[in-house]
Image 1 (tube, rainbow, N blue to C red):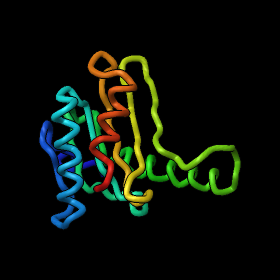
Image 2: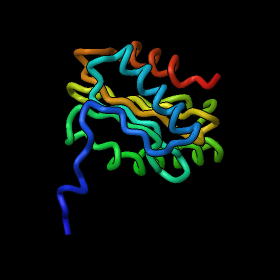
Image 3: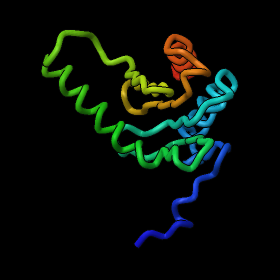
Length: 142
């Protein structure tokens, strides 16, 4: 049964999933991303092990962080397993970027892989270098 009122997202508002220190830090990360990328389409910070959203922001209900959080967590686990099995040469996973026709999606593991941060932005508003630098600046744990 599909109940539409369960699927409604808070638009253009940061939603925090927990009231603890993780939630506060996640909210700070998204606030920082919004400060530097005000035309951000979507951003979220997710617990990699559980796939649970710690904080999220979206401008449109079609950009739903709940739908991508588990998929991205699984993607990161698979890539970490491949690196551990030496399936390809390289160092630790620092980020994943996907360029679409008019969007850029960027995913960055953080907190020793326990969390990840995801953002989506139009390519007219930011290029890959800008998005990566802004993400690095705001997700580096102090």
